[in-house]
Length: 272
Length: 331
Image (cartoon, helix red, strand yellow):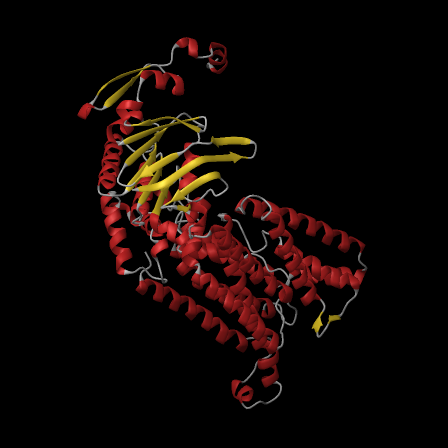
């Protein structure tokens, strides 16, 4: 089933065209990873899909209704979004942050038994129960990221959008989070994650989309997309592709060569 | 999570503090009064109680509650712990209106003393200007609101300084007195109208308290969790501005409450607006009653501007609270 249908999608910040017109369809029950260099338009695309950025041109519909036409509360019941970074000015506890995910479902001042059940389940699955009552600001980057994931899970949405969900996580939690996302996708949810970790994406995603300079440069199964020429073109890196677990592609990066570094600038920042 | 038992206890404690100050304050003053004589309508106790002290206590309660509530709303809207009811220019718009009325020599506008409607109109014009500028860009953002408000604030303050500079001696004194702020007795009809407006604003804020939690985290966070961002931000700005403008018109600017009360309560209760809004409203009201009682009795028969007392009592108390919580990360 088609969830999102994008047609000639464009977006500009003032005079800069960040998304330059492309078509895309995203299905239910699929884990999609979006990769691409800095400034490719990945976060902008996620913000549009989440319903936050509305000033786009072209079409972007969810369940055949243009995203702009959706009522916000209804959209919040269908789509959950995890931004790159969450910083809190005020002393909310981890549990209160998770609870915020229930806002699209809340009717009164107090939480319903369904809300409590969803919060408990989301915190257990994201291993955040132990610091439920700690201030969010006192948590480490990785712990905060897990709390934010729990908040999105508590939303019980059909679509989960994640913008670099594992940036601050240790290896164990990175693997756990991606396995969890893949399982959620295979149980019917649609998961769309932006990441810079090509190997995590290759091992877990059903579909890999490469975004470069505001357009889709490649789209397909990770084994078909991760090719040395694509990586050289898009990311300007030299890499070898081998087979990893489950016959999926595994990328070995070569370090940047000395001629790629500007020796003049390196001299300037050397300690005197 | 909002525990019903904890919520009830907090509200009962805040209401207890409010009621205690509201019931005791009218009994205290430079002249001793006998409540039996008040009850039997005997002069002058009856007049002192019903026409001098009680209306003043009611105005202090409404003003304190409204300013503390406006502080909570603006801090959530701007995600700025230092935001106050005066950050977005409403207070300086009010002040400019009142100062213009004083400089024009108007005594009354209609049936009201001239400074009331003039201050209210000044605030309304400021709100209209800020909204029309802030909504011109592609989307209304806290940042645009803040910058527009600060710019309007600076312009209004410059106009006030110019008017003050060119005013005569008597007008200059009246301007300074108004800008110091203060609680005075008002008629019950005016107080009733004010109470209705403030209570309606309070119930709207309570209804939106869940959404204010989200807004205080971030605009993207709120918009992707079922909140209609544009309408919530507009509502929060109008609500905070109305609360500030409606009381400032009667009392002049009274500082510190909008900053002190929400922060002191956040330190004790946490940031959940479902508790913070009613607690701030009640404690803010009680606190200003207390300060006004000190202002009118400490140097009786002379009165100290209440803004001086709010800072003198509130400042040390706030520092003590911060000190007692210094192990915490917040602040």
